Image 1: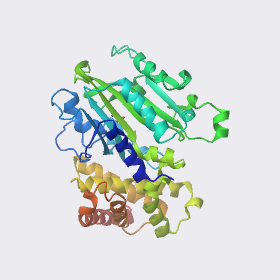
Image 2: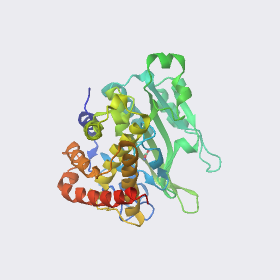
Image 3: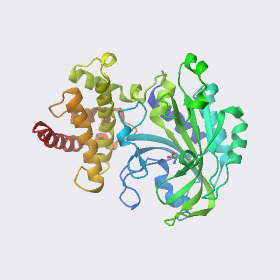
Image 4: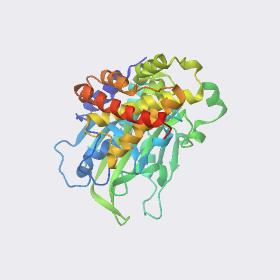
Length: 380
Ligand code: GLY
């Protein structure tokens, strides 16, 4: 099995070989963008380069970005735990072109990386392209169809509308048509019974989007109008946890090596046999092992729980984890803080800021847990 460490490194090395500079993830907490509380996509730190407000020193960059989707336009919080592939905090692998290469290279390299380097079976891949939108006066993306046709059979290229194939960072800001790559992880038997094409974008847990190639060419103004940008850019985002799921042969992101140690800790702590656990327990385990990462990374980047704004979002995440654990795992004592140490170890060498502040992170989480458990115990 390929380890998540190898999978991440392979992505960055691949784009380095295509003359991209490997850069660091931006902090997950945003302090200077009034349109967002937390980084919700790899492109956030490059917003000004897309808008032409900044002239980037390097035209091609790549990274893995810490993202959190718990508020605003991209909010997955209530799904997390109930399905097997959504997360609050996740890593987004990305490659960017600032006015340099465009659709042909972005599509060719995505194909090369997925099918030749990672060796995902081409027969399990579907791609979607933008079908056009009259109200926005944006035509269907025939250029993307032509570029994909060089690599993939026409019946695997599917057209979808604005909801799925026009990417926007928020209510305003950089945007453009996008092309998503979906993988079908079902068994041979299931695939023979029903074509994967019919399951794309239907919420099927084993036919999932893994990578979004965004062709940035507009700025969405506060008026709602789309303004054409002076240059065209590439912004891609691959869900790292989902990529690991596809490459490690499991059908849940929570069963990848990324969560193995947290899961082992929880099952041991609460005496649960994972393979025999009730659905409610499995949901609670997923909630906890997802949310602890969100807490650890946001606190490491300077956001502590509080009663307002971004701090309140973090408090809600912590309480959601504590509540599920209290109700379905029998957790009546603080324990989340102990998991923080495992997360720090899991990301050593990738996000060292967690290890550097581990004591502080654990203290904050434990205090919050104690306060909340008192409330739960007293039934308030
Ligand atoms: N910016 C690409 C994505 O978040 O999907």
